[in-house]
Image (tube, rainbow, N blue to C red; front, side):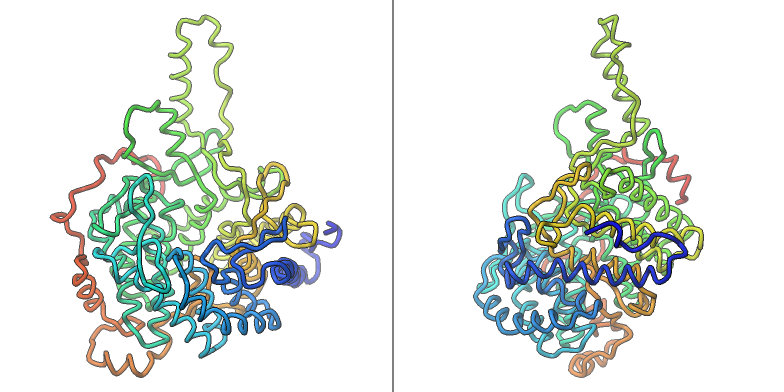
Amino acid sequence: MNASILCSTSDDAPDRWLCARTRVRQMFQLAWSPYETYAFGSDELLPLTRESRDNWGGLAVTMADSLDTMLLLGLDEPYQTSREWLLHNLPGKIMNGGDVPFFEVTIRVLGGLLGACTLREDAALLALAGQLGRALLPALSASPSGIPYCTVHLSSGRASCPESDLGESIPLSELGSVQLEFAALAHLLGEPRFATLADGAILAARRLPSVHGLYPSRMRPRTGGPATREVGFGAGSDSFYETLLKRWLQGGRRPERLRRMYEEALGGLRRLLRRSEPSNLLFVARADASEVGWRPQSYRSRTANAFEHLSCFLPGLLALGAHNNAGSNATAEWEIARELLSTCTELYERQPTGLGPERLAFSTAASVRAARIEWRRKYADDESYRDREPSPPHDYDVIDPRWPLRPEYVESLFVLWRLETVEAYRLPLRERGLRVLHAIERHCRTSDGGYAGLSSTSRPTLSNRLESFFFAETLKYLHLLFSEPSALSLETHVLTTEAHVLPVLALRRVPSGSEQEHAHDETPDGYGVTAARVAVAVDATGATSPPRSDLWPPWWPSEAFLDEDLVAEFGK
């Protein structure tokens, strides 16, 4: 695309946000066209080779994941074509399906179907969502601990987790990121068992004593115990903490235990805050006390200071929590959200392509000190070592330079633009989103006019991958960023970790069957199931709803990850 026809970034340009919205709509159509031509009905398009692949179980993941974005963008023709294909073909694929990843299919396919039903009432799509939900449910119901299995065989219901270096285990993020979809399904169908089992997974995790509100990044379905001592807010953990807040909001600010868990997790987050050297960029580190054997301090610092693009969702999450008074210090949470967003902006703007890398390692004062000490020890007997001393730090080193069309940065831009009350902070957010849109246009276009991710943010080299979240999240968040608040209310809707639009259930009438069944409950959640019933149902599987130190001893041997200076800076 010629840069001259990009939407203007001039403040006085007329209708530039209308131009930006129009361009996002065109981008969706341009990306959809090669999928429709070369991969329609398949999970993903390989955009450079114009091939298809079924890497998520052959359930037309890109198609289902895109439905509610099409409705928001007013793309009725591709929506109707996709809807008809899914209604005709997906039931058989579910009935005869093999092993599928429970988490990915839930957030992409089930979430996509429910998002479409939220924006446009559709009994046929809801029935299809119900069929898929029942096929996925054994991942939860077959678990002896309440912690879900990673994989479920659609036709037989067999659930399992593949062996890994940490044994049979599931990431914390996959354990706690399916509750919004199953709660909505329970409410819309009047079948509370969906929500009971999904919410029970969080209660099962809660058996473990947390360390400042944080839980191990992998857990074992068969025992409910930890598979690692790592904690953090990056890959493997991120959307668990997101779901604590959003499930509470979805239930009409209930149940209260979810808000408390979220509040406690913010205490752990503050203890993982670090600043880079020399620019003082704020970031969230990770902590892991499970290392075996000795490692140099510089190596351990580099590992702890790893930061992923995925973590750029945190500014939006913190802003949403502060806006709803879910934490203990909204002022500090807003401050952290703004600073973390500023760090993510720096990561984008310091790259030649204007797009942020997948993973990097920050330098801190402590890591720089450790590296210099080790260097001097290594060359203690070499008189010329001072001439070869390490160069000054430059904030971070890129570990993984890819940009696979990721949404997390524009997600936070959108949420803060919607909720920010300080105009000086709010005004630049749309301009930053416009720069991302322009960078995608300049560097991610394929030869046939579609889009592909980048294999490196330092040079515009395309990769042969078009993830479904480009349609479901990246383009949706850009559209909402450039739209007026009336386009989608954050008071009446929640956006899942895959950005699917679901209703706040407390604002909707419970289906009559469920309403009658639970008419005697004194404290129903939004989907018609009491917190007590959820706890009882989980106890029946061998889990226990409150934390139980007699079941599991502390799995974290120290609190070495505290940074008291930053804890003091942002408050307890």
